[in-house]
Amino acid sequence: MYDRRADLPVAEGDLDASLVRSVRRASWMRQGFYVVVLIVAMAGQVTGAVEALHIPLVAAIPAVAALELGGVVVMANADVRRRLGERAVASRLLSVAIAAWAVAFNWLAHSNHLLGGFYAGMSALGYAVWLMHTENQRRDRLRVKGDLPPTTPAYEVWSHWLRHPLLTMRAKSLAKEDPRLGLYASIAAARADVRRERRTAAIAKVLHRKIRAAVDPTTADIAVQVYDLDEIARRLADQADYSGLTALIGADLTPARLAINAPIPGPAPGPAPGPEPELPLVLEATAKPMEKPIEPEPEPGPESEPVARKVFHPEIRRDIESIWSTTREQPIIQPVIQEMAPEPDEPKRPTGSLRKRVHEALDRHVPLGDERDSAELLDLVGSVLQLSDLDRITATPYIHSWQKDALARA
Image 1 (cartoon, one colour):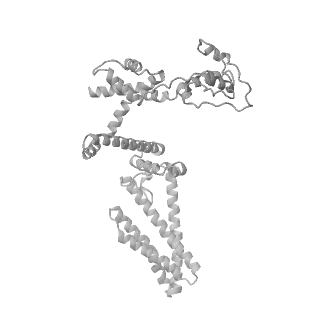
Image 2 (image 1 turned 90 degrees about the vertical axis):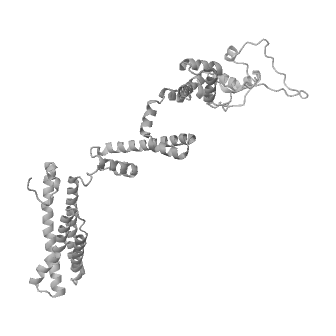
Image 3 (image 1 turned 180 degrees about the vertical axis):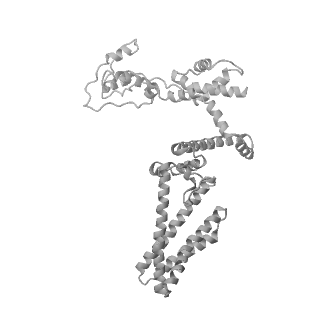
């Protein structure tokens, strides 16, 4: 053991050389401060005792010194008892009472209250600095013994405390538990804890609902508490079908789907249309051959009945407009489409979601124990349900989920 001063921190030997010099310099300055404050406070006590109590100067000096130092001595006693594990409440209260009496005497013993306030402030300042230094030493000793957590990183005011106060408090607790984390590692660990808690809560909710549907709620509560939800989350991550989920999301981003869902642009504003133009060549080339030429409709006379105009089906109309929009302006195509297109019957759309129809088709046409792979099953479903290419892409994850259910039933 080396000989060290009692007023230096316990962990002095663990500090770097520059910090050690700073600690020693602060110790010398603190001792000089105590001497100056004690002299000023004692001078105030002595002059107050002589002026107010008419005590001789020779008797006033030791009496006042005992009063002024009494609070510090009793607090030092309390600090020793606290090192031994006691709370030392009585000694601490007595020390505060002595210091308060010394401050009050300095204030009341002088007829000039401004001068008395100066002496009282110096007495209170000396006691407060001594009290703070004693508490700092006590925390240093507790930290070295492991009874006090290590100091935490200095988190930023705006980026951490003001924007994410709860996350920063969690990071501070983690840094106390493991000092090796540091500033940014503790923030990252706190974010990971929050994500894990949310994931565990979601898994527990789904697990409780599914078990409660099969058994009673009490058994579901027991299952949620018994099963390791982190292990369930890990296995779910291992079994995640990222390809199927990516295809499911990508199906909505294909150009064909975006073109179908896009709104049909109306005619551009411009001058009043003139006489009806002839059918553009691009439409004549793409239109199907007809057996009879299109005869112009007779204009309605005063006695003739109005003739119903036939229009294209909305999907055929969108296709023609998309072709014609690249070669001519939009107003030209409107009268041509309205006059020459017959109105087909509205096709019957299948009812039910695509997932339900895929599962029903597989249940009907695939026997139990069938060993066909996903591609063969996709061809089967596409031929049975007459799916388009876009629907085949969307149906791929539904085939995977049906296969997993079939394996579970087997």
